[in-house]
Amino acid sequence: MDKYIIKSLVLLFTFVTLLFSGCSTTTSDSNSHPTNSEHSSETKDPTEWNISVYLDLSNRLVRPMTPTQAERDMTLISYMISEFTSHCKSKKARDCNDHFQIFFYPSPSDPEISALSKELDTELEGLENLEKQDIVESMSAKYSAALEKIYSSTLENKNWVGCDIWSFFNNKKVDNMCVRPGYRNILIILTDGFIYHLDNVTKIDDTYTYIPANVSSSAHSLNVSRDGLSNLEVLVLEVNPMQPKQFQILTDIWGKWLSEMGITHYDLVETDLPNNNKHAVKSFFLKTE
Image (cartoon, rainbow, N blue to C red; front, side):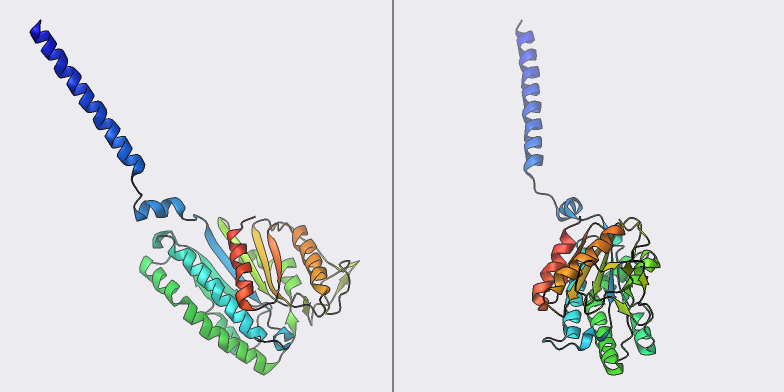
């Protein structure tokens, strides 16, 4: 009988020891803080960014303001690059396959600008990890130097033929240049909001391929001959109406046009001090729909 009691007590002691040991392990796991790698895996945005910046190098650059339009543009672009590089650095290098580009349409006739524009395309997919890190670290200085030369050359030449934003969308150049499957596709257009190009001033029934500087009604509709752009987000920055009431008119015209092409996330932002408008950029990046 004594042997039976002793054996039972040994078994009971073993069971209790194992039970408390299990509880201790569970409590430790539930209260432990994740390592940096675990935290990064839980909080990182898995979506790759495909950011395209479309520059309007028209006579909007010579409208009098302080800071100048060129200075405002370059400051905002610098902030966009900062947001892009921060996004890249929030991920492990092997997971960073993002893309950032600045372009013009139509392509500029100035050979110097054409050559410089080749430096304004950052493609991280397919690169080695160290190469990605080097490129991300050097983006700000590289883009700043190229943009200063581009704006300087544009202002010196004064070849104001306009910016054919309507054709860029209608001819589906936007699809080829700015939309990638599996990416978050963001197109940022730096323009005064008046769509005009010397070779494309056309009326189609009751719609137009341009928005004149004297537009006075939201009834002025842009022609829509395509859709299918639900995978594109559009932010229009530095809208600069000739008259205060035109901002709402431009917002209505652009909004109707973008919506009818299938774009659901878009915004128009009036020109302001860059420090004010950079918040619009951040807000747009944070909001996904």
